[in-house]
Image (tube, protein in one colour):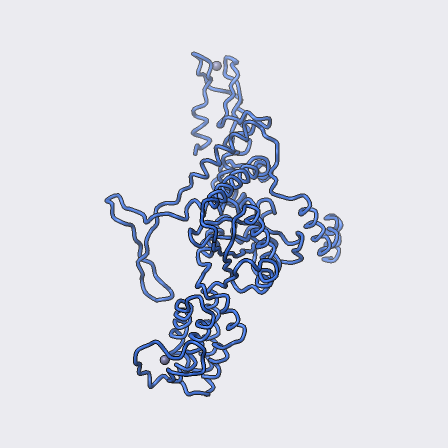
Length: 479
Ligand SMILES: [Zn+2]
Ligand SMILES: [Zn+2]
């Protein structure tokens, strides 16, 4: 970083043997580049720029291209870059040039890198065993019904690598509103995998009812499992509510959830076992540990227990409230899709990292959303197998973290530093493109989809009024 005054003190005529001061200096700023011109007392012309220009047709200053690229590749935004620079009066690129560089150079390069990356991953499956278990989930750009975009990702649960990801926008074919983003994303991912001849054996998702329907009707050859963690979470939520009304349940809350996990883990893929093990809690809790009414599971598997003070009374309000939760029809039905004890846990890890590339407070265009999703996938896949970090003396790195859940400090492993070499590779591609002036745009957007989205927006919002008229109308109402 160079301050202007310090820079000016260096400005001297560069003609051999001259070195006189430059008079009538003119300073021109092009984004982050500064150009100084003038003449010395002997009349020698002086011209100096703080950056070389890329020799492409637009001859953009190299620093401007680098700044725009670094901003996008690190998940930052044009706004944060400019705000930061403005505070310290640091010369930076204009909004319009940022978006021009993004469109002409960055997006096509990100697309190229992502395509090569995902193709590599797909190729590896030619040599892998045929049955693949994957987890799938969507993340929307904003919560609730206001979402405009959804990113659906499918992750191999064995190696936690993302093998397909698709960004879907409201208004595209079969996506009349945000509810359908997830469904459409899943369909596109499954199509991609099918086209690449990757055979999905089991798909794990949360309990989105439209997803269940799609899987049942369109992909009956794929086993559909529900994420066990989501199921446990929904039971816990209901239990917490019931505890408010029935104090007697409270001491049992943790044990009931543990029992759910135990039932899932020990059912050996059998729906009957899972269901009977899970619902047996309703008998155990009223001090009945043997029964004959079930098909396969007839007694508790614990040793002698004395909980005399805690047993509920059979048929009491608390017991009946618990029955409503444990033996709820939908839940029991859903257990059929949870016998494999699968979870989507590592997708959640990806989704929290995704926020780095798609900060919730920022809005991005369609093309940019797709590219940012691609960057996040590359970042995830290249860093998913990081090892435990080592110290300079060879020891392993740990940190102490406060756990809200267990209300104590817990020891956590620190992973080795992330590998961002993909950014360096991208920068090389970016400069190659800036120099050779390749004019081809990215093909991230499908023209037909873009037309549909525009039409959909028009049908929802009506024609956009002229700004002048709208402002005039607003002003006259204010009077
Ligand atoms: Zn001179
Ligand atoms: Zn028991």
